[in-house]
Length: 287
Image 1 (cartoon, rainbow, N blue to C red):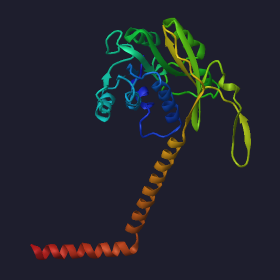
Image 2 (cartoon, one colour; image 1 turned 60 degrees about the vertical axis):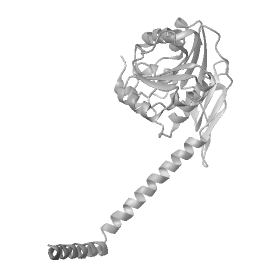
Image 3 (cartoon, rainbow, N blue to C red; image 1 turned 60 degrees about the horizontal axis):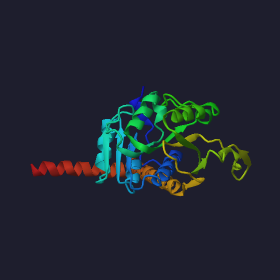
Image 4 (cartoon, helix red, strand yellow; image 1 turned 90 degrees about the horizontal axis):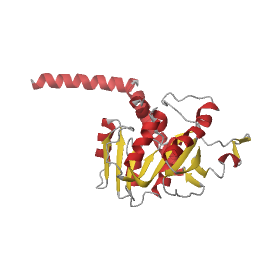
């Protein structure tokens, strides 16, 4: 069963600048190439920035999310003639049968256990030969190997499980692998990401590190699926925005510290006491 609080807690906001930002923006960059002039469904659409990005090139985009408050905020924030947000569930999509050319679902499937119901609904709303673009963390590299557990995830899948699910519902599918650094790389499954030489370090030491793909991105359709080359997302803008936000926080804290220091100084306290007495005397004479 889906968990509203879990999904809401992990939703990326447009003011967030971190590793996840690069990952999500890179996925939407890939989707942008496939939604030009199309009828598109984004499920679960969350804050709405992804649906808004796709609305730049798509004929129409519908974003669906389970949280009514999130949907209301998205409709208020992103106002376009070809963009609309609706309240609905992944296994009860509030849209007509065979109404979309493309369905996009990034980092949604791990937040619920209705995987079969989700696939059935996606197939229902897709036009014949329509395309599904979907991503999921690979449980092996996301959870098992680092020995970490994401409390917001209800049911994660291993690569083979994810592949079997999609092949059950679509005649054709292809798989990409994604990994973040300060940016993001997406590689076709035919060119294993783990074969890349990757180094990590600082001025004191540089070491060779692994490059397992934490995320799987799949393209599935009853028609032929698009082919993709290896792509990179440059995280420079995200990193700069993060530093700018950090500097602003430091400046605000410094200003608050100065204000606090002034108000607690002996001179300020004496002056404040004199002003208070003068106000009292003034008020007495004005009565």
